[in-house]
Image 1 (cartoon, rainbow, N blue to C red):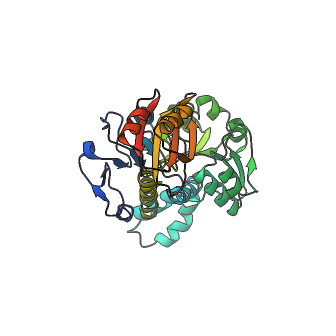
Image 2 (cartoon, one colour):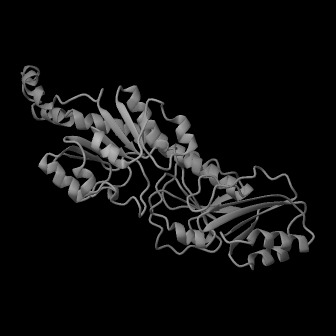
Image 3 (spheres, rainbow, N blue to C red):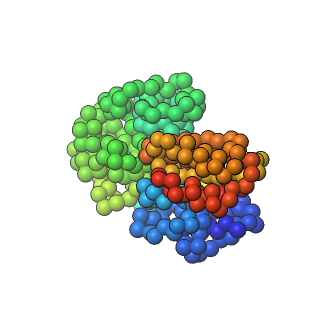
Length: 387
């Protein structure tokens, strides 16, 4: 019986996918698996029995990835599950920035008691008219699941689209429209686009990447959209650029004291992936990833270990090993199994930075003695008997 706990509310349609062999617990110390959305985990004590953490969403800055990796805990996220919800709000953000829709609606509310409101509106509307997005140039920084959808939607709306992603995946390359022009530096985006939207994960290398210098290099009246993380942008410099008229609008999905109420800031209360459909999709994907890992040892969409899969086990036994990425480790695994008279019928090993993951299918069940010997090998973090 595997036990799971939820640090945030997780959509029922996802939790219902757990079979009867899984039990929900409110005690983190008893959990084999944690499902989380936004709850902060950096100061949590992670129990030794914890196998995995699944983030129902894409961002994982609330999870201590290295701490989990050192304990052999695989961290999953759900890339693409909320992409459409974010895409739609980014498109809405562009329209809100171009046409003062909110200002117009507020005017109507303020003049609701005027019997001649229809006639008055004809005179007042020019203050809210704005411009169109068709024919304008959109720069998309980060062509992952969300960025690709935004780029393709913008093409369909008649925009010229530039895309920048030095780590473009093969899947994204296949999915992005051939009308999207790929550029090789972020500076190409800053200098040539009327709209700029950023869709990259928050890391040390991306924090503050929309810097004061980047903002200064942008075209006059550029609209900047940030639906990834507020700290990707130097928001103090952004507010100064808005006040100076350098930047037309800054649309951001992360309220904080710097931008809330600032001139020409459109601040949204973190609604990007908060649609019912996105929450359902994230929950279902997270549970699918957990079940496949617990029952088969397969890793899909991990952020601290390599993806690694061998399908459903049809052999007599299967073990998984999370370990450091050091030389001669695999030969030690095969030697332990060979000395115990256990034949390895199939095996795969994948690495990611400092960490690696191995799956081994065996012609006979593994014994506790073999598990103990494997666990004692230097660099091994966790050995798990799957079958």
